[in-house]
Length: 217
Image 1 (cartoon, rainbow, N blue to C red):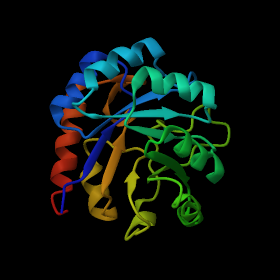
Image 2: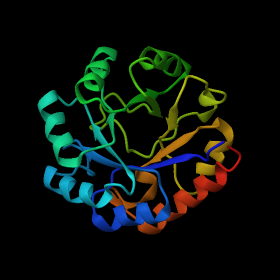
Image 3: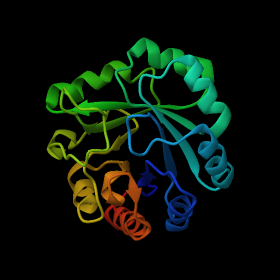
Image 4: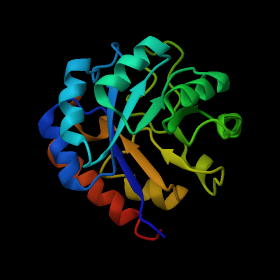
């Protein structure tokens, strides 16, 4: 079976994108959400998108974006996948997939077993479910806070293609993979030297640790 898929999210500079590609990650995530410290402009997206083209899968992360915003993002980045990280409904996910004809990752906030069960509602409309720690009700952003949820909730999960996120870093990703059997992992804050600023060495360490931790696949 193939090894674990690794996604580095929240990239915003050319050096960290190059580090992500050099480390052998499978996906590069770019954030389009102005409240996030990892938000990039359409101009930056064009630049980074050209560099990434054909070298790594590009993922555009949005939060409750409307069609006009998504049109502009898709035109600038030419993403390979769309990640919907807000409160998008099942109907909205289906509409986005139909409009752009791109694979869709739907983020699911997890605080307890009921949240994992509720993800089934998105299975038929999303290509990949991404399980992340559920943010606090008053949180300004829906992810990237470095918060870990109870990985035991994902042990033996068999609801189709999925990714594990939330508080992962080079030190804990192997254990997370061991406990959950996740086929894919996603990291943002866990490879930063400060909030919103990626660290090239941590990116390389994370990918190496995930590859080692997922060697049993």
